[in-house]
Amino acid sequence: MNKIIFSLIAISLLSSTGSYYGSTTAPVTLVGGIIKAKHVEQNVKKYKRKDCPVCKGKGWYMSGDGISKVNCGYCEPEQTTTPVQSPSIQKGGSYGGK
Image 1 (cartoon, one colour):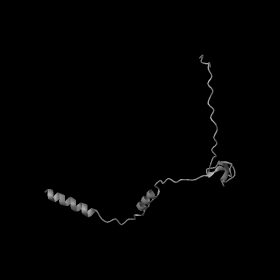
Image 2 (cartoon, helix red, strand yellow):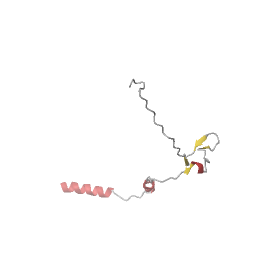
Image 3 (spheres, rainbow, N blue to C red):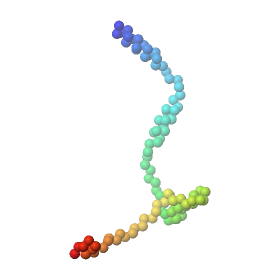
Image 4 (cartoon, rainbow, N blue to C red):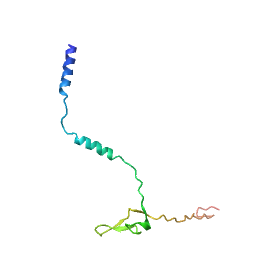
């Protein structure tokens, strides 16, 4: 009895699986898009502010419609170093020390 049930299940499974005649374009496109979309870090070199051809050293340029100013993303601002002044420590300050 068990052999008959097993053989009926096996035959039904084998007969129900057939060849697929549909299009495989969508799955292949999806997989190709996922592979292509892998993040690759790129080293983007920006212009120095004074050499920037877009903003010409101003740090901004007019938008395409001419209405607003847009911060320039094509150049790096010049690094200005300001000296850090340490606060002077005074004896006998407001806390009442001697």
